[in-house]
Length: 120
Image (cartoon, rainbow, N blue to C red; front, side):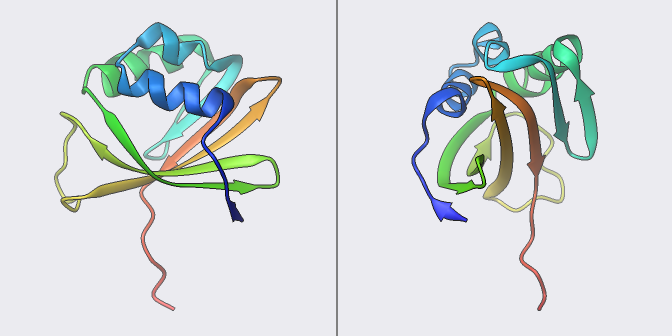
């Protein structure tokens, strides 16, 4: 993995999330995309739109980008998340890793994970 710049549709996606703009967020996804967030999978635009409306825009999520890494054409964005979501059991600084796969200028998959440092 190597550090890279936040560009293209991934940059557009983060900007749209921070603008709380459902239509702009949806415009970053391919029609047959999937999102896996907190071990829940949302497949296709209807399911992803419901997730965006309720859990991103509805919860007023904001992402402060900390790191952007490139890995074999995929982009990993680590960011500090704030918003009105349930923070029970989470640290004060909620840093999530977002694994983006992009094809033909659209996000085809997004996996959002709360990673923890390995013990070894």
